[in-house]
Length: 376
Figure (cartoon, rainbow, N blue to C red):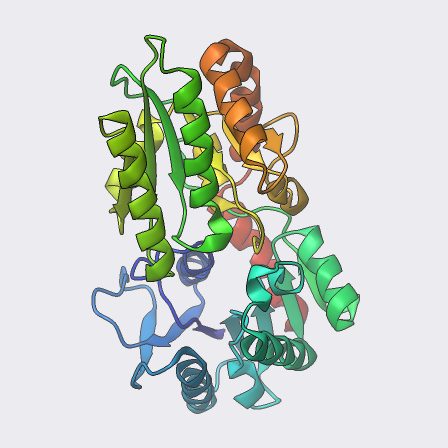
């Protein structure tokens, strides 16, 4: 069977959860014998082990709305020429390539989240917000099947866009590579790690404000903390805000307590997970699942997560410490609780590790293949 996968960004050029998801789907389907083609933007160092082929969309990167439209039209044309049995689209909010693909080609839209309906951040640019809603609505109408990571995304699609629930398939989990065991690198400090793109919804600023409270509370003790914030660039403006704030806190404390790392290599991310005493995920919205939480759990580390991730299903009160989204004081208190009582968090970390062991990419691909067979 011939399968085309459309994704503007491709792992590891773009180190986002949605890009990694479709990359692993492509890899898994190729290994199962599917003739797989990737339709993506022209870029250097595209990851490929030779099991699938690239069809590159060449266009000038202009203002985001124009670039998105241009990519979608050109990607649709490439898919039509390829004439696959099925096309899978990594449906970013503005991605509309499925609208330009022939009716006889079966279409699967992968929609990771619809936070644009709930998040006030998504509504700041009203014109962009309305365009995104209209694009997403049209995509859900032409898709033969819609794959989502969690029940909350399904319910949002039904509530806000009136999508036929019979078209929606809920994965219920995403994949993780392992190591599925506790691993630790001790540097003599309490290491607090956040991995995630630099974007306002990820909550790096919230973590930094919480760290200011934590630092003040422990200033007269012999406790030493180190905060590692790492991720790819989505918003340069927001990244600069995070970097300036971290620098200001470090100056106030007279030492580098906070490291702000940009575009970190996979091996260095792995080292951060091993170094971590605890991982923090303070997102305030626009999340479909929470892959970095799962990755932390797979290393046997406890997680403090906002209640956003309880809604997506990756976290609950047994396998994570849940704090209200945007609540700086509660986040600080949770970190202080860990500093004071690390053994209290061991049972939580063990539950997280147990959950992560069930979430292999092999299981994800197998479930996705079932959806493809539904359309044959």
